[in-house]
Length: 129
Image (cartoon, rainbow, N blue to C red; front, side):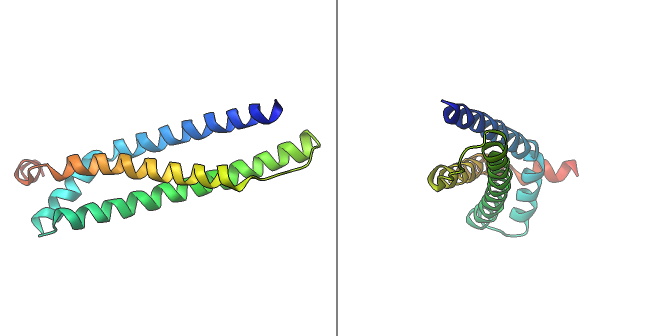
């Protein structure tokens, strides 16, 4: 019962972190559009631009997931061993699954934003600058 409560709390925390990360990605949409327009004008293809953004979002998602996993695991360790005075067991499958899910979600959100940015007409954005 206590283990389930801790897992539920961890899932809520991870969901909040994923939402914050998604919001940060969405906030940078204008910059992505501008970068895409400049790269297109310089001759980059859709494939090159897509790969560049996917690498960026993959690294961002993986780094955020790894940092949150380390912080969360450390907090859980001290909570379980010091406060509850019970034996610490780290199941690696949920931890790795969460890291993979957060990374994939960041990639998906980034790809959606990049896909929309790839459709932007360069002339409209270059006139604004």
